[in-house]
Image 1 (cartoon, rainbow, N blue to C red):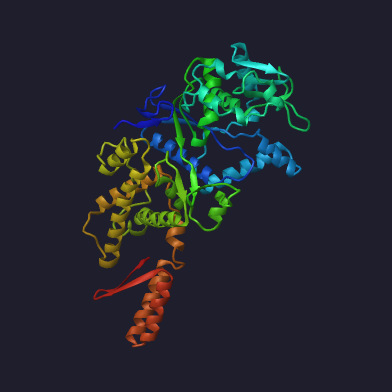
Image 2: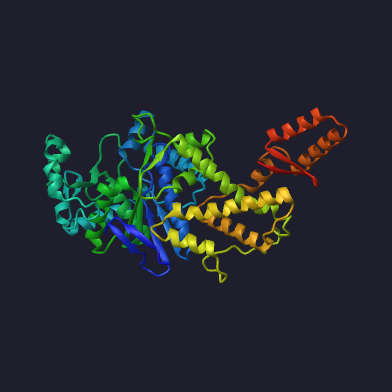
Length: 490
């Protein structure tokens, strides 16, 4: 079962082979920290979080780096409006980022480099580009000479001559920056300082780096010349990732990344998400409305990661229902384990994995499906199958007090579900779900059932019905039979 990935660079699926066997160097172009993260950020962060988890699950040692862009015009503009500083704005929204991601269950990256902390690496890379003839200074700025890099456009598939044909009517020849360039396609590596803006000293004068050079430098500083996976949103393919390739490969002569992976965008009710359309939703706004973070994860994972995904009320409601099904399966062991004779306390329950010598058809099917370009929607079908089977078994235990399936087989199914759900970052809060889902403890429910039984024996059927309805309102269903009254939580 070979892992195969669709490579944006080659435009075809390719078997996954790493620079160093058994190890993955992975970089994700992170957020520009000038505002709270929105649903588009949620999708990207969830997707690459699960990609990392899956690579670790199948045995890779993963070094995962995610950057923060903390130098940008949008950050400066916000600082100006708030009478603050670029650093203060960036720090505030980096803190907010970690808060939002923790709520979504995103595992932290191994490192979060910031552009402002990579200034030496940025200047060193610009200097090397200049020495090799790929960059030139112009009145305090430094520009990349695009036509010097013969492979420019290989990631996006764009050709300079095609772009030139439609660009003449969009160029402002009076723009001072345009006049500094030797060619309209050249882009800034270093920008000369402007009054009132933060600046760093450099061989070209005080200034700050351009956006594209920041990621090239951070990749090189943290992971080396060639990495295995460079990930990001599809909106970054051009010009950002195209320019990263031009900058990095012009200096090293080596591929910047073996695999370029891009997640699709998020739409809202069929339209592009934007503040101007009024359909812009932040992660915290969504979660503060009561949407379960695990439902958000499930919503993201129900679509193939490269395709656009449409956020609608119906879609999040369906994801919420789906999460309830999986959650019920995840809680099965904690609800029925003691009745089945399981020992959950001694830590003697090994979790299934791809390395286990015991065959596990569920894990084999999950891995075979997901190995096809991270097909997480296909992998979810295995989880739903397990969860529904466990729910059926739970109902049998509640209604009949026993099950025909062996406790060992049920334990195997439950452990497998917990394992695979963990690969996707889907986790139920055990104590909260078990003890507060109805507001009543097991002992309180049993006491109510006893009170109802006494009322029935006294032929006080109104009181008996009242207790039954009260329990039903608390999410507790009663089943009367010849053997007595059984109950289960809805």
